[in-house]
Amino acid sequence: MKALVKEQAKPGLWLVDVPEPEIGPGDVLIKVLRTGICGTDLHIRSWDGWARRCVRTPLVLGHEFVGEVVEAGRDVVDIKAGDRVGGEGHLVCGKCRNCLAGRRHLCRATVGLGVGRDGAFAEYVALPASNVWVHRLPVDLDVAAIFDPFGNAVHTALSFPLVGEDVLITGAGPIGLMAAAVARHAGARNVVVTDVSDERLELARKVGADLALNVSDGEIADGQRELGLREGFDIGLEMSGRPEALRDMIANMTHGGRIAMLGLPAEEFPVDWARIVTSMITIKGIYGREMFETWYAMSVLLEGGLDLAPVITGRYGYRDFEEAFADAASGRGGKVILDWTR
Ligand SMILES: NC(=O)c1ccc[n+]([C@@H]2O[C@H](COP(=O)([O-])OP(=O)(O)OC[C@H]3O[C@@H](n4cnc5c(N)ncnc54)[C@H](O)[C@@H]3O)[C@@H](O)[C@H]2O)c1
Ligand SMILES: [Zn+2]
Ligand SMILES: [Zn+2]
View (spheres, rainbow, N blue to C red):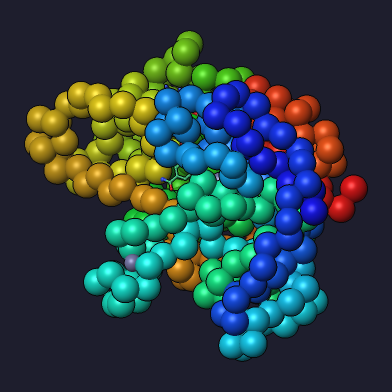
């Protein structure tokens, strides 16, 4: 089968023939239909410091996908050939304290699909049945392909109750955009999104942000004044991984404000701890999705009318992966989809 592989320990990706994955009694074999390109895939392609430390070659990339089941192992129940499925890309150990307690998203030995083991940028992918999500509600294929990052957005946005609250989202990348759509849909009062890209801020307006603010030529405090906020934001969703964004956020929160932090900073950095303490701000780290509570929430949010269409801005056949990756790396658009059927 064709697969996008990190064959060599240097920048680049290679579209090559590899053997089809084999399945065990508890696994499911999936024909991949569409995949989403994630920042993680860009890191592996460019072979930066993180990728050099964390990735062993050869590796089939990819963790954001939708596909169709072609074969289920003999111990698999409730999943059958023909089912349209996505997959939770965090493979957990099943043995640690959190796994045993059913808190699988907190597993201490998580392995990432397309990072620590072969992934979904291929014509077929195999997964343990316990990682497979069957789309029982109708869902657009492109949207189904990005359930993984959509889940990051939902997990983060719904970490704290936000009905009637003023929400600040730093970073209008694909995940920040989806978080803005979720916050709007879930009943926030004001949703403010910041970025340094005007193109992405335009997408933020399309998904329903009340204010989309370019922080390279404006201050969040000005945005607060524009909306008539007097005491700061109630909820912060950090979606950029940038030190200055978290610092700005902390400076603009209300007393008792709550921050859910998904953005992954590249390095350690200082923040104003005295302000965090005296303003009694809560900061919660978010990694991945809750299995499978977040997946349930995603399905029913879409069923209830949440619209992610503006977030998807690039569509390519898998043979055009170079163009697709360049599009995703430009930092200007939304999510980029690879179609594995053309
Ligand atoms: N914790 C997790 O499980 C998890 C999973 C996926 C992604 N992530 C991280 O979440 C973040 C968002 O992911 P993404 O795919 O949307 O990333 P992305 O890189 O596409 O988006 C980040 C955005 O932040 C913007 N930005 C840069 N400086 C800024 C500033 N000072 N203020 C506001 N915005 C600024 C960038 O222009 C960009 O549009 C990334 O840091 C990513 O590494 C975390
Ligand atoms: Zn991803
Ligand atoms: Zn575990």
